[in-house]
Image 1 (tube, rainbow, N blue to C red):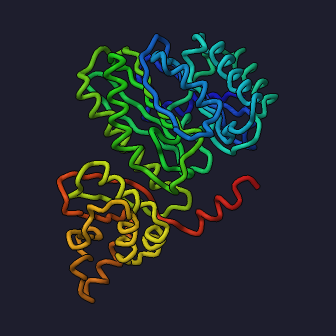
Image 2 (spheres, rainbow, N blue to C red; image 1 turned 180 degrees about the vertical axis):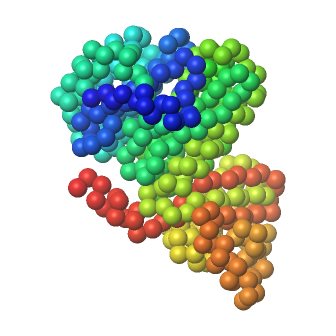
Image 3 (tube, rainbow, N blue to C red; image 1 turned 45 degrees about the horizontal axis):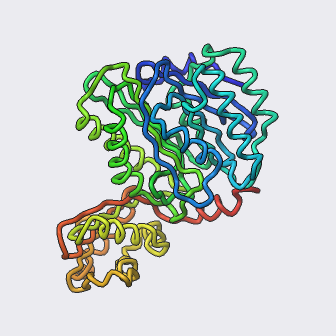
Length: 398
């Protein structure tokens, strides 16, 4: 059932931009806690969205792609704990029914509603409890819409250990983002579920361009386990209530907000104890820099070394060298550092090893690589690999 969040709103400093409201409630998708959320603009809006390229994209993604093409989304609804993927024709019908019911509750056309669904793959949605939930919500109408961004971020969580929110301002406009996702995380054109809401007024082309640039440099530079989700969605909705803003300044603020959420997602990776940041410079082009950085951040051997605070730079060299098709890389031109301590080709002295171990024990670990081929650079974000990652995923459906 929907929950009254009026008491939390006063103590939560993060509020929605002008013209947005939200609610969360329990629809039977998990045993306890809110698992359905809706955010809606009270006025027409401009939107942009990007989605997973997985061949097994879920019905929520397939339907939302069609709606997002109109660039006038006004509402986002999320179902947690169930991806509604590989559920056949019934799964498609269930996703469409969710959209139809949400559109009726908030009073917008169905093609202005985006639906996100995330969690276990291959299980049908519990539509009986979801229908009962929406019937009760419909009776209350917009009076039930008292949830804060933090409430929505919590309701979206699956194996996340904490909610992810961020806020930025541009002139008189506010930008608020919420996100979830800590596993099955190797974005490809989008990532997890991440929604951004703003009262800035922007042309559709400016909003779309800002989102794609931001995603390329933030969410698409994130990886927890190399596995691309079937449900990845990122969207931004701008309702213009605060008036026009400079598109360049907005794009900068949006990218900064997305980077904030990216760091939160990486540091909360399933079983993670540390944020791992890999920067590759001196590359021939940006694509090469990102490719090599991803190769390092995704290496299980590098990730376990980081977890154990073991400054094993041989594993970093391995992760670079396994890119056998990248024949422009010359070992003699490569340098590797952990933080500000070079470990290759200048091997550190014995008394430096203690400093290296101390550096590797920090909550954030930096690996810096230069290829000596050009001036391109990329930074990617990930986390260490712990025994808890295995435990979380070995018992995920049981």
